Image 1 (cartoon, rainbow, N blue to C red):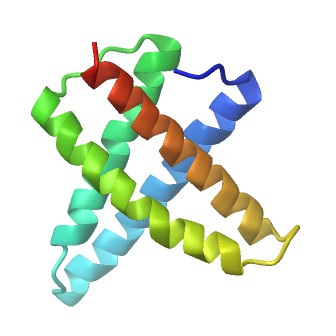
Image 2: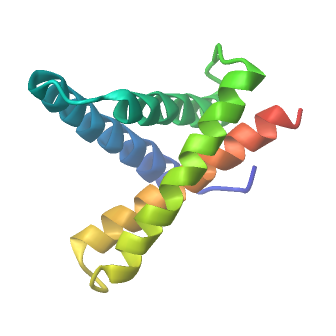
Length: 121
C-alpha cells in the first residue's frame, strides 16, 4: 500500500464514515417508503468493508471477510468511482463539495488498494 500521511488517513476514514452515515439515512428513508433497497444495502456493505480494510491496513484491526467477499466489495467500490469522478469534474474549483468529493475519491481508491493488497497476499 502506498505511503499515506496521518492527515490523509484521518480524512479517508472520516470520508468513508460520512458516506456510510449518508447511505444509512438513505436506506432508512427508502425502507420507510417501501422502495427497493438492494443496491443501497450492497453499497453500504461495501463501504463498511472498505473502511474495515483501511483500519486493518493502518491500525492492524482484524477483519473477518473472505476472499470472495473482498472480490465482490472491490467490484462494488470500483463501480462507485466513475460517478463520483463525474460529479467531481462538474464541481466548482475550491468549493466545499469539490473538497468532499476529492476526499471521497481518495478514500475509495485507498480502500480498493487495501483490498487488492489483501487479496494478493
